[in-house]
Amino acid sequence: MERKTSYKEALTNKIFDITAQAAKAINVESYVIGGYVRDFLLQRNLKKDIDIVAVGSGIALAEKVAQLIPKKTKVQVFKTYGTAMLRYQDIDVEFVGARKESYREDSRNPIVENGTLEDDQNRRDFTINALALSLSEENFGELVDPFNGVDDLENKIIRTPLDPDITYSDDPLRMMRAIRFATQLNFTIEEKSLNAITRNKDRIKIITNERIVDELNKILAAPVPSVGFKLLYNTGLLDIILPELTALKGVEEVEGQTHKDNFYHTLEVVDNIAQNTDDVWLRWAALLHDIGKAPTKRFVKKQGWTFHGHEFLGGKMVKKLFERLHMPLNNKMKFVSKMVMLSSRPIILAQDIVTDSAVRRLIFDAGEDIDSLMTLCEADITTKNPKKFKKYHNNFKIVRQKIVEVEERDHVRNFQPPITGEEIMEIFNLKPSREIGVLKEAIKEAILEGEIDNEYQAAHDFMMEHAKKMGLEVVK
Image (cartoon, rainbow, N blue to C red):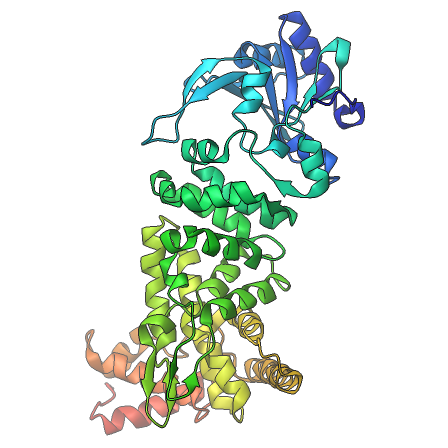
């Protein structure tokens, strides 16, 4: 049943009055539709972008709106898609003509025809995104809700307007969006719709990796990301998108010895870190921190299950995963890879006696990312034993305090050698050679081991002694 309730309070921004005037001037109906309406009804922070549909030309409506805005406003026109966009104050407003769509099997790009508002609402992904508010003078603010989307908002349900098999097969990205909205809003995907995602999971292969990653980032950015990753796993999508993660699923038993399910452990770590940081790349590090465990898993008699070298291999796997998904291969990838490679180091420190030397090496290897690494490792504590939980966290506090003390004294974060390679070449009259690297490495190791202070004179004296042993002589 279509609702006709008025929601004028959603339309207080001046852009809606201007759009209503423009629509009347060119004799078209116009409606604000989609996420803006949904978020208003959910009493969430209103989106910084507004979608307006015109029963007619969206481009013509945008151009008329721009004329009516007091300050000159530039309209971006995308003729291929029949859309136009302008910026009003700090809001992006997109205009599109009402349309109906049909799809080919090998593409999510539809064949588009002009249509009615009903056609346009039919093509929407979910009932909660098909809600429209009229911008016409005679029924300004009236809600058009042909699929009872308001009921679905109240009942916290994700449901497609039409047959979910058609909706998801036509545009498979909607499967990811369903799971993303369920995660962000803490909604439930209707059973028919959830089953349809499972049936249509292989259709995700026609979607570009960039779009898939965009949805993964939004799931990771949610308050409880595990909700989304469990749905991705249960529908079979995760095995297609991130097989490195699903490889962690399950528990094996040999000679009565088992290991934990590293898949569900990983999801706990991601939820833990989501409570402490908004940094999506640190959340990616949490998601991938154990991916090296599946290929390194071994059962050793009298020792049990081992995952030797999983951090190093996992760090290498991060680069391949980023390449495959067309994710950024810049400092973001390097950061995630480094976090994965170092993910066990503070844990080992927290279990053993914390030596200054070990802390110096940790600070040296982590550099500016030491705090992020500690946050990741604290999130990695998922034991259900309250005594162990408290003990591990107390130990991490000791490690954090030790990091502060050692760094204040030794300054090894973002370490720069007190003596440069150029100076070594000049002192010993050397050309670029292996000896220079050997001396620099010896100085660095002496500082990290605490044999000498991290300052010029101590480094110089150590270098002269070490060079003598190597048979190098100072040029007078």
